[in-house]
Length: 149
Image 1 (tube, rainbow, N blue to C red):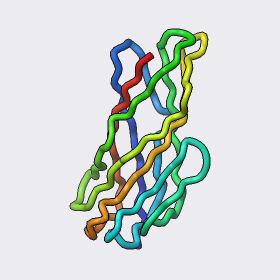
Image 2: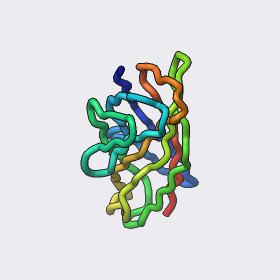
Image 3: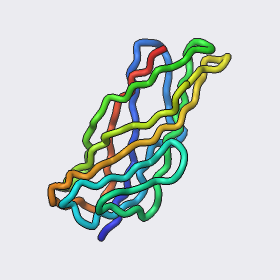
Image 4: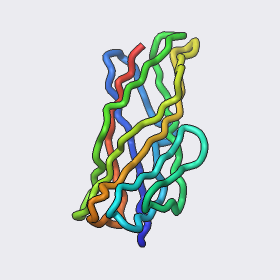
């Protein structure tokens, strides 16, 4: 059993001249997959502790993302829609990939008087469950968010 480290970064699309950055990227921590013959998952909630299911064990827990959105009009409610699912990638090596199947975002996100809003974001990562092996490496995924008001 080898640990696997995940760093998941988000990109954003929208039709306004605004900016989004991550104070803390969404991370699924370090995990071990005991057996990939069944689909397993790790969940990082917006608040609370990471959980796993199936044959996946958490070695070190992940962290929810801390997203900051700037240059919006003051006192507007933002609607954030993730574009999912997405598949992970690695920089080198032949390995099975994970699927980022869910994104959890706080509800009722409103900008302040300066047009800035912050939100926590969690997610769910699932294995293929097809019996193939995962390398001991870092996996990344780029996902898109549609932000409107």
